[in-house]
Length: 189
Image (cartoon, rainbow, N blue to C red; front, side, top):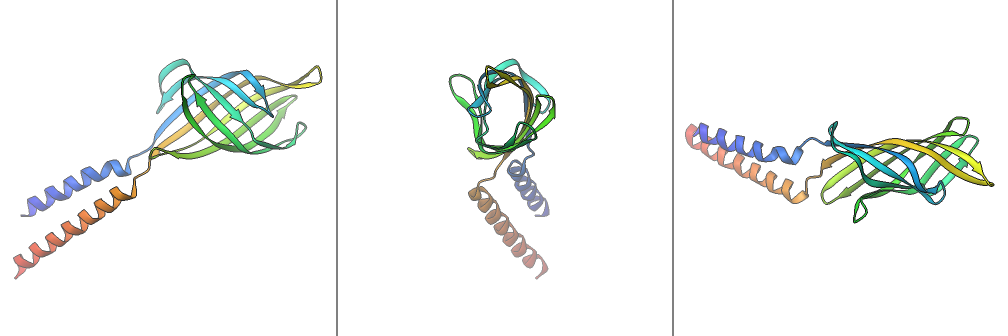
């Protein structure tokens, strides 16, 4: 009887493990400005897609679009941005899109560092991450131009257990505890 109870407990633990699975780390780099500006949004080439540090798609695989939303601050000191969007697009479909906010800081003459974070849940998976972009600003024909954009993006994907699965697991554990209690009572009596 004890071996059956142990086997049932082991099976429940085995089936419960995917519910509490670890996260997966996704990363890629980007470089260059295909189009846009700080105000209208920036499009860049995303390359070298990696899962848990292993590159699975070398070279360009999508375009990265960063819309910074509402900018505050100045070119002299930098500032913050809120209400932006972060989007990966492979030409035929949007792979990932989420809201985006963060800071942009002046790190040298005409050189800026943009750091933004994002978080969303899509089809039962929570994506959290951040991007760090370095770019130059120049003034051509009285226009502010963005040059030399390059950066890294890291995304962590974690499965979000649906409430129904957790409830089913909980009722199964309560039922198993009731059966074990009844068996123990009959053995003691």
